[in-house]
Image (cartoon, rainbow, N blue to C red):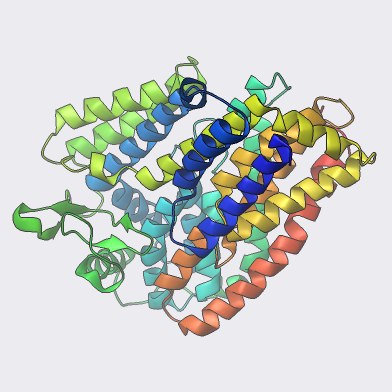
Length: 464
């Protein structure tokens, strides 16, 4: 068996094992890189370690550390309260607010699962209070996280843009971001119409707790330990192992709820955090500063301004995500060294019908991502599509955008991290009923999503 074929079989085995067993795919990928590189390709240890993505590691740590600080000091909670305050009395606007906040948080670098873990309990609190359909509010969280997931300063956007740049292909970070946003926004509109959104326009808040009170009650319930496990330092955690917002470690491992301010007042540190996030966006987009180093710089400055408030932020970095991404990218680097990427591209191109090949690639991304990691599948599929795109038969910008949309929009599946978080936190609907309905919706998205992305982005051929 050739080294190229063996490396592909090893990659498939990794996805299967990571799906069936609770083993981090990134750790499996590092083992695979070591075994395949050493035994099948005769690579030295230095060559294998040379494939480790150091710059990507800094990006992941920087943006997730900054997001952990924003969660620790209550900035994320403040954003939710402020947004809901703006639509006081207009229940129909609550789903839109949830979608917008989710998109905004992922767009500035927060990992989508972390955003879903934080927003889902809060969103379901509003849904239960104002009798909003559980699927409507849950899918607004899911599609919102994916709408902003490919911004130029996001984790997924950085991965895809980095791979295409290294391959020397034409790329457009704006097209990638807008394509993902447009498809998920369209899906959100369909969800709004399907699950009772128009009926909300005829209802207003009359009496009962205010939106701010509901948010506070929901956060208090979340931190009480009823909807998650326990972190290593004794604090509460949302399902999926993501720490809940506003939780700080007390002495002896007792969780205390951090309430930096009341109402819509910003504390000094929250104001500095918002300014830091805005500064990060401006520095990266306007001044072309390095995303990872800039994010780390902002996070360190914020930590120095309030050391006690940000104690434990490093522990809340999404280390499993960091391991996942860096491990998969390392393995892909070994594949490139072996020649597997070129080998796959040559055989795919031999099919002879570029549009058919493009559709197959989109469906592979969508189907696998519905059961596995979006980050992992993009880290593997995008490099494998590069040789095919280098032939110039299809527009690489459109194809990469279609592949990204196909792989991410299916995260509404209950087998994905985001979908599982929705099932775990659902309120106002029987969990088994919700699971079955979400499974049906997710299956429909898996069938329609890649086809729509291919038909609207690739087939017209308007993006070279």
